[in-house]
Length: 220
Image (cartoon, rainbow, N blue to C red; front, top):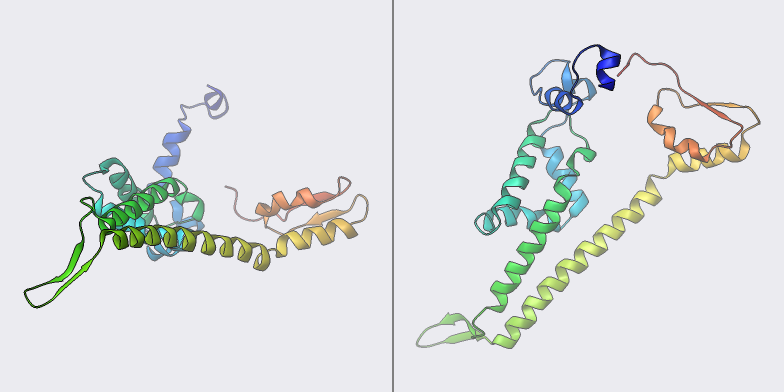
């Protein structure tokens, strides 16, 4: 009703978002206006975000299709859509995050169960008349636990390392605004050129300063 009052026509915002972002054709319109990325962008970004959990999630789709079809198909559908979309951003992948985590956990448990064995019997690596090499059930339990613990440890360490890396190597905008906040004069105008997305950093500015942008050709 509110949209109709302003636009004088029926507007369904969620439908417009879907229609606009479903324009996969070439040209300068639609998503292509904001830049395009190859399909590899999706895989590189998710691997960077989830490190060891991402390949485990890929394996999860393959091995859990029958036992967890909803999660597996949901992951596959989202991956297909994001791979085909010409314009890609990290924030688009947020719906995949819980699916990746769940599939990675399921795959880890299934691999551990396979290593441990459900029957509790020794596992024969080599069995013949001349030679018999087997792994005891206790050692299989040990290997299963080691596998799960290593997966968790690798994921936690790499994730924490990446978080520290973000803070250490990509903190320039925060430091810049902190410097401006300390040295800004009363009623001074701070211009950030066309970088309107820097607005959250303006929270570092004193209350008696004003944030401004240079108008660009992009009007939304």
